[in-house]
Length: 102
Image (cartoon, rainbow, N blue to C red; front, side, top):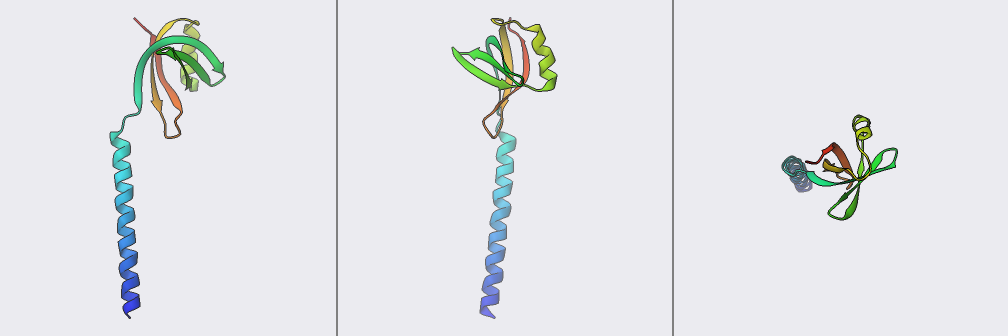
């Protein structure tokens, strides 16, 4: 009987820890903002789904979506641009918006 009580207590203890861990991870995800806006120089398409922009004298590759692909037709190599991008959990930079810099 003591083993059954101990086992039940142990299971309840572990299930409580799992709930707290998941809650704190969700709160962290909501409070951390991975979105940034920077100015740079548009270099051009690196491949069919990636553009390159020089930011702070460093080449930055950004993954693009189908929506942002049509916007890219308005830019030429060397144009000054303002980019807004998000860094996802895998470390990829995802282009959210691109516009001419003032």
